Length: 158
Image 1 (cartoon, rainbow, N blue to C red):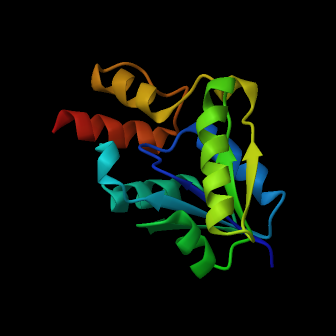
Image 2 (tube, rainbow, N blue to C red):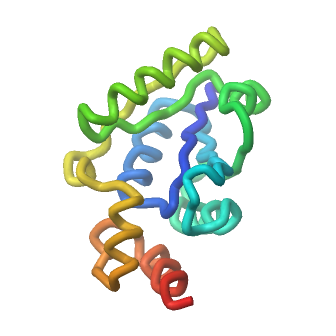
């Protein structure tokens, strides 16, 4: 079974993320969406909240949701993954993602990085923009599923 990891912060998960997941499941037998437990990014939602949200909106048979700490290549090895999935929205994403792919290849020769482009309607979209719009009470429903809209409203009303 060919297994891939789609790592990310997913703070919150967007339609762009879900589009990448749907593309990845066409290429791999199983995709693990893995929430990074990185305090450095100062996430709005806890790792556990992000896992719950992804599970709620991503009901695809060959997709599971997990979280990880530490080196991604170590986690991928533990999961017997053959590839890492990375989304590329624009040329601006490429330089960072290319550098990370090279470092990951150096750390684990057996692990490949697969770059997937979302549908063009999502290329301008990222979680930071969604959080900012939501923080000011703006409508984020074109960017995230209804359940995520509700989670954002609750978080910003605290």
